[in-house]
Image (cartoon, rainbow, N blue to C red; front, side):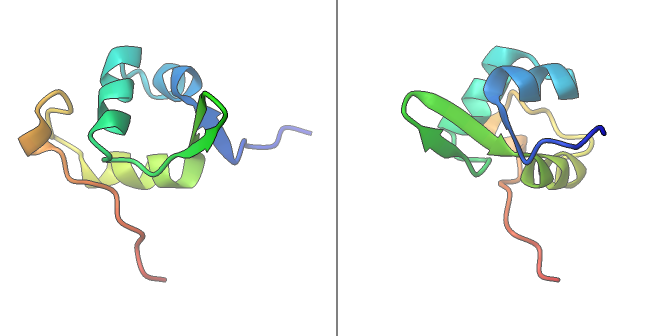
Length: 75
């Protein structure tokens, strides 16, 4: 059985998306993504990461002004 993870570490999220680790860490630092802190480990919810990527198609994720922060979409 192959279940999708509910959350990923910064490294896992970077590998999964193809975004560099440093860029992913910068997005977390800029508070563009929601995160969970478990001690020193940062977890990024998978569903929020998918929504964030859809919201930021054609955006330069290395420029803070180009990035739209994640906001929970209403159902």
